[in-house]
Image (cartoon, rainbow, N blue to C red; front, side, top):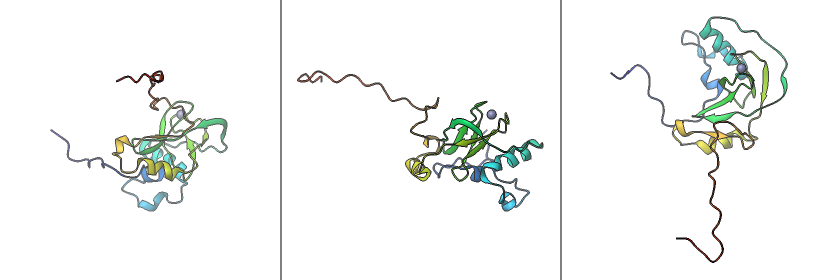
Length: 157
Ligand SMILES: [Zn+2]
């Protein structure tokens, strides 16, 4: 029997950002985490879910390029240490992995994140996928190999 207690997935919506996803539990007011910077909301969300504290670290891990992507209608970045994925936001382009606690990573969003969101606008959520032009992500579709052009004067039919 099909479950009826979960709302159906929307067919289309703007890509989710960290501030849209990591929300206070229903027992707390919507504004409870208003003063928490968007990139840090995953920490309080994780603490709420796991009922345990996480360490707060300052500083940034240098020399690591991390490209966020739009993946199934969410801005997502993979931790460069453990590959755990997290929902992120161009409004606060940082990542702190709540799985391996490896530190803060600066994220390399596109110069115009709204243009990336516009590129997937109207698509079904599962088809809202976008990659940074410089990103060689494991899940990025590869360009199909093209056959060499036929010799001049000979057109194949
Ligand atoms: Zn990690």
